[in-house]
Length: 336
Image (cartoon, rainbow, N blue to C red; front, side, top):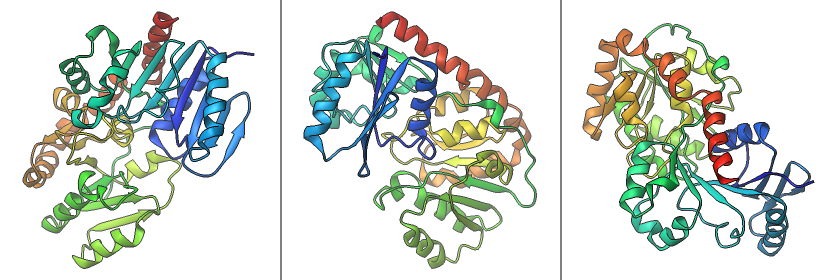
């Protein structure tokens, strides 16, 4: 039996990976199947998912074409800088959700491919403005914020000293600077009175341990394990920090919106795509430069109650599953 929608993804791991969680929500709510170019060696094919190791390219190409013939809408879910599927998906209405927007220099050769898509979905207004500047017609672009199960999160007052949670473990050492890992450690060195909780994923573990040990950062707690219930992690902290140093990362990080759902304000750099929402709704502090991170932490701590009271209602306004599903229903209806 054919499916209405096929989601084309890369590295589908909904238990641990934020983008995969978004796709899993959509797949549960629409008549669909998932096609995954897996980053680990695997081959699975059934009614719900086809997952094949990306280096088995000839077989992946054949299966991709077979799956594409059976669907009515192709939905690619990836960074707008990743185009492994666009060469082959041509016949059906195609929508792509760009969870991050690389610099124009990186994707300028693919602008023509983007222009031929039926819909381009981005996760923040900043990315929409950039696509318009690059020549994509405004009617082709939609902003859809990620959705989370808000019922899984609730406010719990943190105990002890002021603690800040950092939950963005990079997969490559080169990304320590880009994702703000190094900046968090520098802030911890300057503010011994503030506790920093770093959630890690067992990748580059010795590298981060050595950095913490080198500066004798006794106020940094490294938690290296998979946390099934993130609400428990937020309960240990007063706030969450996301100090991206480059714009071309996930526009709407999952840990940020989960923190808001748990009633915990956030500290973000203006490189984070949804920093405009944080500033507008006054549910956290936005800083511009590296040197401003200390003053941002101090500002949040000083006026904590003013920021904290706006967190949950911001999550309800922008990031509910119901709104997420409804927005995509509108898009799919238009395409079909």
